[in-house]
Image (cartoon, rainbow, N blue to C red):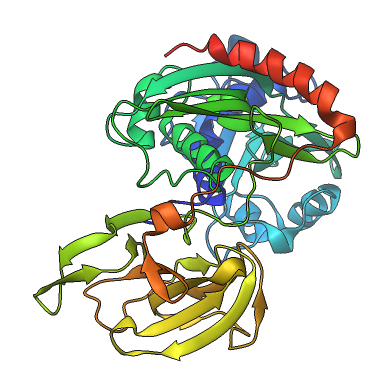
Length: 426
C-alpha cells in the first residue's frame, strides 16, 4: 500500500489540531482587546459559537470555523457575521495572507466583545505554528501581525529488534516517545539513508536489530515532527552497518558509514520508494498461467501509478510492449548490468531507447499490463544476458570515501554520536 506523503500527514495534523490551537494556545498568547482579558473558549469542540466562561471577560464569544472547499475568505467572514466593508479591511490588514493560496480546512477564529456585532480580533491559522492576528483599532481601523508559535527540540536514542518488519519494531520501541505517524516517518527516513545498502522490505530478518539517534521537535498542541537522524546502526545477521550524519565545510550534509565511506553507492537496492514485496526471487506458481515456472525477478506490489525509479545511471535500451511483461523498460548500466521493469501502466515523459537516465529518476509508473493479476512492478537484474537474483547482484558495501580534509573532524563526530547511539533504550 502506498504510504501517505509527509504533506498529507501535515495537512491532517493542521486540521485536527486547529481547535486545540484556538481553544488553548491562541487565547493564552493573544493580546487582549481594549479593557478585556484574553478569552478562554468553551470546551465543547463541536460548538460553532463559543461563550467564554472566564470571570474577567464573561460574555465574550469566540467563533471557531474552517474555510470550506471553494469558499473565499471574504465569504467565510461574511458567513460569520462580519459586514462586507469590515471583511475587506480585515483581509487588507492581513498582509501575510494570500487569499488565492489558502487551503480548504484552514482554521479561522473570531473573538467578539459582549454586545458588539463586529469582532475585536480575527485569527487565521496558516500552519500548526503560524498564526495571523488581525485586531480592530477603534471603529474601523484594523492591524495585522504574524505570530510564530515555538517548537521544542530534543534528541532521542532508540533501540529495537525486528520481529516482522521495521514498522512493527518502531511501534514497539518508540510508542512512548512518538505518535503513530511520526514512527512511520522515522521508518521511511531510515530506509532512505540505507537504501543503497539494505532493502528494508525484504532483507530484514527476525532477530536483526537497529539503533537510531534522531532529533524530535514538539510543537503547538502536541504536534511531533522528526528532525535529522544523527546516527543509526543496523545489525543484520551479525553484521553491523553504522550511518553517521556529517556536514562538511561547505554546508552539505551526507551520511557515511563507520569507515568514512559514503552510504551512497552505484545502485539503489529497490526500484520503488514506497514498496511492499509480493514475491521474491525463486520458483512460484504463476498467478495467471497456473503452472510452476522460474520467477526471474522480484515483484513489488504497490498502488497503480506509483513512480518507478531507475536504480542507477544508465541508458534506456528498450521501452515498449513485450509479451507477458506488458509495458517494459530495459536500462543498461556499467559492467554489463541491465535492469528490467515490467507490467508498468506507462512510461515517464521522454523515456525511449537511447535516453540517458540518472539514479533515482522516474522512468515509469506501476501498472498491471501483460500477465498481471493486480498492480505491481516486476523487477529483474540481468548480467551478461542472464537473469540474476537482485538481492545478490546489487549488493554493494562501499561508497566513495570522505574527503581527506574532513577525516579528523568526521572521526571525532562519529565517535561522539556512536557513543550516544550505544546508550539507546528500547
